[in-house]
Length: 207
Image (cartoon, rainbow, N blue to C red):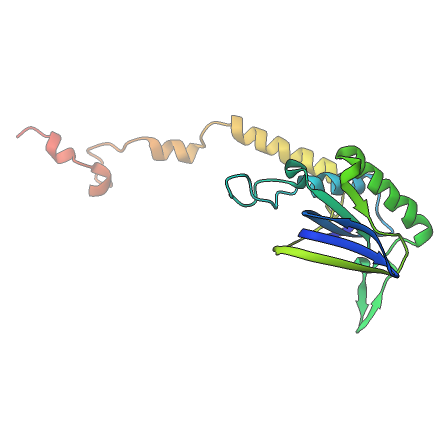
């Protein structure tokens, strides 16, 4: 699954001469579904899209608020061409999920997003139709998003667990031998000690 997320002041979808969907300030999500996508990818993408901090807060500080924080709208548009692989100069779309499977998968994605946010603020285009998408990009701000490459691989989760365990061991482990050695002050009579290491030893000697 691949998404191109654009921060917009407005966006709309027209099919033929009819405008079928439009939003004001918010995000427009162009979504390409691949043959390898699973429900775990849907969960990841919905969570990331809705929590992506690309808006300023009330004081004007940028990159602080998500579309949910601001209660803005979301326009989703299915776009299989995002799964393009070039063969020379010719686009190849064999990695895109076939439409008979992609349509229910995309609808499930939309339902998941509506459950996670507010259904009335989630709009979409018309799956499989020839659409005119009007996007007024604000910034411009455009973010590309994909799920981790190996979310379908059980080894991926084992790797994450091992990384977390190493982090926890690092937190609880005391200073290393080398660091303890560095922290021990050198003997004042040690001829190998540099003048910098001795500090103001000379001032401590009896006159």
